[in-house]
Structure formats: structure tokens, C-alpha cells
Length: 157
Image 1 (cartoon, rainbow, N blue to C red):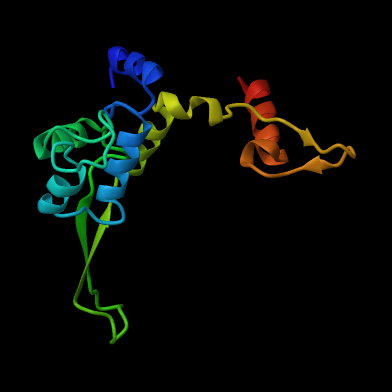
Image 2: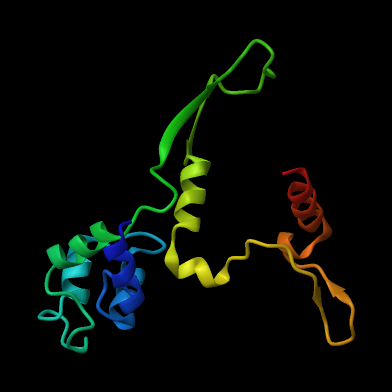
């Protein structure tokens, strides 16, 4: 994602959709599974769906699809892998198992590189206390391990 895209995201957090209503409609149409083209045309294209407020639907099926294509891929592409049975495998194990995965480094890059998530990330350890002065441990960065590793790294370098 280039700098221009980050500026667009700062101005419109629902990009590539025009507003929250349009984003919610698109979300409904693709999750948990994508609706058929006919259903999208009849239910999300403004000229076919009089109940949709102007600007909250889509101009056409092509408009809807183009906006989806603009969404950045999160975590890299899904790739198919196979695991084959070995002589050490139990008898009940199938000959071949197919599974789907993403590159974990690409997934991490997409999370860290998403400017919308920046306010929710922490890069340094912190000790957090409740109003009674008791230490709270809720995230990795609030525990002793991260603090110990940061201090160790500081003194070693």
C-alpha cells in the first residue's frame, strides 16, 4: 500500500466504499458467503432497490465487484499444500491430506502495515495497574517476559 492509499484511508475509513452504509451492505453481501450475482443486482444496485438510500448502494454489479477488487489482500494469498502419508503414519491416516495456508510473515506484514490498526498496537512493554494498585496482565506487552526481553536486549546491544 503506497502513501497515497494511506492518505485515502485517513480521509475515508470505509474506502473503497463511500460510507459506512455502503460498507455494511457489501459486508452483508459477501459474509459468511458471497451472494449470487442476481441477488446483488436485485438487492444492492440502487436503480433496482428503491429502499436503498442514494449513495449507500452500488451503481451496478461491476461497481460492486471493482470496489471489492480494490480491497487490499490481508495476509497474502491462500495457497494449497498437501501432506502425504509416510511409513511412520498410523494405519488410519489417509494417503493424502490437502490443506490451505497463508505465509505467516505476509500475514504479519499486512497487520503491522495497516494504518487503521496503528492506534491499537503496542511496541513497548508496560506495567498496568487497576484502581486498587494491583498489577494487571492482559496482553503480551503487559507481562514480565516482554519487559525482561526488552531490558536484556537493551543491555546486550
